[in-house]
Length: 120
Length: 107
Image 1 (cartoon, each protein chain N blue to C red):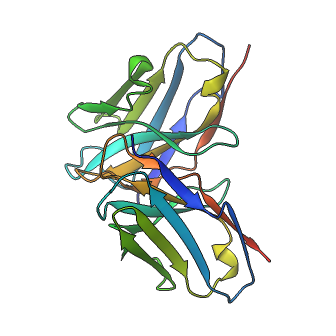
Image 2 (spheres, rainbow over the protein chains, first blue to last red; image 1 turned 90 degrees about the vertical axis):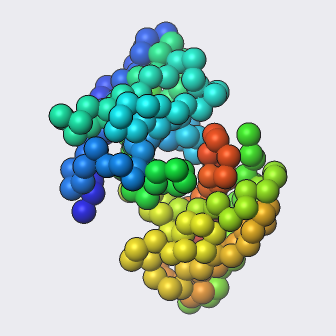
């Protein structure tokens, strides 16, 4: 069964870059039928899609975050990554990595999520 | 972007009772709507895609209906493991967007 496990610093300083990696096991990050994506949930708020990346490296970002987001996939290491630059306290959230069905856009598998706090 | 609105925010239900959750889209999303179950500390779980297609392993007591801008998730007889937060998501337009969630709690 597919498992997604994220890793990365849980505390990031304002104006710096948040970096997370999601390791994929029990399935292939080279799947032609899925995207790999990130969703976040700030405390007390709803879910927000950040962006998605295909095995080929093509990306699709939420326009609200596009200016600060970079996503990539490493098929040799079976993981994909998120970088969010120039963070502020508003970027404090639980970050989930997830798998999306190709073409459609719903998430069929999720990681447990990790709280990333932006604070000095 | 498409704004998704869920109601009610909290639903108090007794075990064995029926729960009806609503999701409204600010514009038509056709049938491109999914429902997820979330228990804090766990991975969210896909319940339903394409408005009414249950995901693998999802019990038959979960059903989805609707089209266009109005959608419903029904849990026919609540079990203890069903008390959680439920989110709808539209994927008809990018960016995909989620509703604010409905918390189903024990009455």
